[in-house]
Length: 266
Length: 268
Image (cartoon, each protein chain N blue to C red):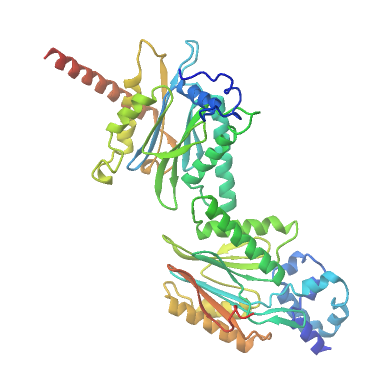
């Protein structure tokens, strides 16, 4: 029983939310966390309410998983984004080399976490719209702040219609301002932060970044902190996410620093 | 007057055989009959001025409709031509600016605002059921992202350009000649440092307006001025009335001195 629970939970145990398409407000902060608590206190009972066989949409909501981990670091200069490369649903692992950091423009990118459908749909929607603005307005580049606002607006508009179940960290480099980073969630909240994490990663990594982040870090140091976080996840996080991809955004633009599995290998 | 339309000027949806759309040209003529509007891009900001002829001796002075309006904190618009048409353009500009800020969280860049107004004005030249706007719009705007200020002018045809000095309305030809004499174009001066400041710009615009004014022919007028400069914190604001009054004094004095000089020369 516990194993069954463990496995399905690993697949993205938001069964709490699986029962309702739209999460109830108190649980919605971090449904994954609540699921975790449920696992700890009421292990056995959960399987009676396990929605796997129940209704077609439940399958989708299980894949509404925060099991994608997501770390970022921004300082005066470069922004470093990292995500895991897992694409999985329920008990199945589809691929381990997914690139979840969508490049929005020459100097900005956003790391996205959530079910693959919304992940791909939303990131393509935003990046193509931003490209359209560039093309329609004589090559005018939007600042990171503007891009983040646009993104947040789309998320906010969708929550009462059919939310994009994605959590986003958008990072960008502006010529005059330097690097900046915005953390957004699926309901349209948006805040500018120096370091952030979405998904389960936050439980492990925020404290690491609290300690290690410093104003005026250079790229090398920032990448070291991100790698420290990744190490921590690999050691302590229940879900095995062996592959991570790290991208850096600096004055030169967006570039892939390293990946554990080549996203192009498909 | 140029060639008569002879049948090709009934709708803005019709080209003439020589490739003109007469309705749009007639709209431009409507602007030419109205009070002069001037705009000047100075070193530290943009100044705009509009001459408002007082149509009627019965009009209560200083209450006539404003020609210069603030579109957003950082941009302002001056209109000349059909004032009611201009009103529509101003409302649209405000909507565009407000919309842009809601979507992108930043102030609308000057070029974008000018382009949006351009597109809007142009739309009305495409349909037979609508008539073109009979108003020219000067747009003074500041971009906080690039820290640069600019002046654009949108004409009834939907064309818009960025200018160092722009003029529309009755006295635009002589005004342009006068503006060319001012130090506003960095190419013709020794770089930026030599360009005039807004304070100077206010005085020069007042002088141009008064130079163009012919007491015997033109109606008495009110002068409306605004600036968007470092001094105003990069916010579009009306030039204080006493500053305008001082500028007008100066202008009148200058004009008198110049005409005295001319008389002296003639005597010699």
